[in-house]
Image (cartoon, rainbow, N blue to C red; front, side, top):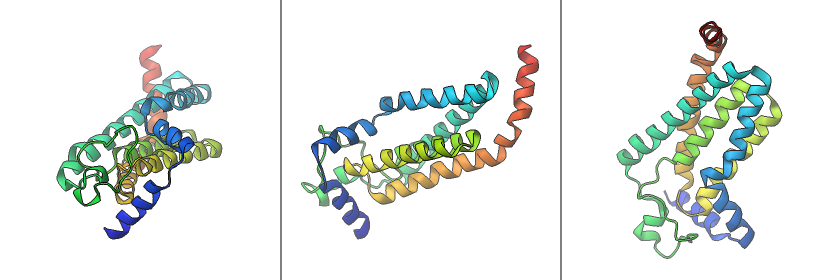
Length: 190
């Protein structure tokens, strides 16, 4: 716990005006809409609309499950206060624009959701350059949560494990059968 707090406080204490702007934007879902649009376009361009529709549906399911598990189950179960709500850290955590997040932080939904989205997309699309883009997306999103002081590194790690596990299971259990589902969809739409 002490190491978790020390790392968080070190990251949170290193601020710059340009980084404030970058991290504030990185933590907002709306910022990533162009990336999501690019992902959909790339899927459509490579696979056509049927497999794109199935892929997007799987990614939405993975993100929805990771969000439900992280926010709906784990945060209330562990009830670990975010650094911004921890009385022992009062005055030590720098916030930005008055943002403190919800009461509980373990596990990070941002980390879980971005990891689930990125991992599942890379398993479907299978192109190394997009894997690097997805990795950057996850790293920037996760780092922004610590920079803003709303998650400990342990919260982030827990979220990454949740998101990865869900996306991995879907990639192993469902993705190999997408061609069969696409053929079924083709028969229904023709």
